[in-house]
Length: 172
Image (tube, rainbow, N blue to C red; front, side):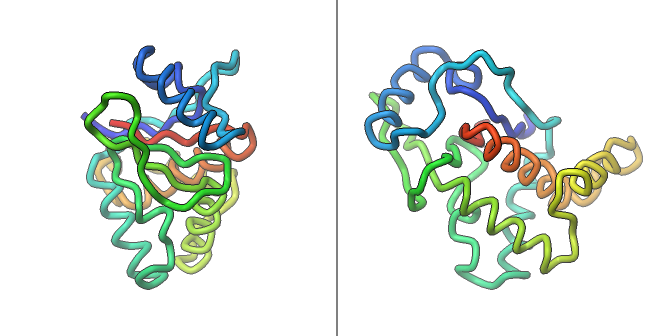
């Protein structure tokens, strides 16, 4: 199973019962987090190779230095969201679920990835990111540069999430 980055309401991304509890927790702790139900369609990336998330985190840390991207580096590609509100990276306990739900700030993620992109001479605008992502749709290249494929899709998703004021979901 690969990784798909998503932007939308919680009930569009998560199981219904869990989504209801998470929306209540977010509304109480982070008003304006944007996870409540909406009519807007979910934006999602193509399925990415699972190894791309860790490879991108390693590359971001190498290029920017240790501690320079705390929001991006705080999230595992498993069970969390970048929220369109000010927050520090952390975890929430949601209902009876044993797995803590990771959170970080969407604005900080976007800034960190844009700074990385500039430092690595990569596109940071929607058009350039789309061109970079489209390059890997070629069957001969689909298994190459997982870190770059992940970068393009995560930053594209972050730009969409910022525009919509909705969470960027990182959920297996």
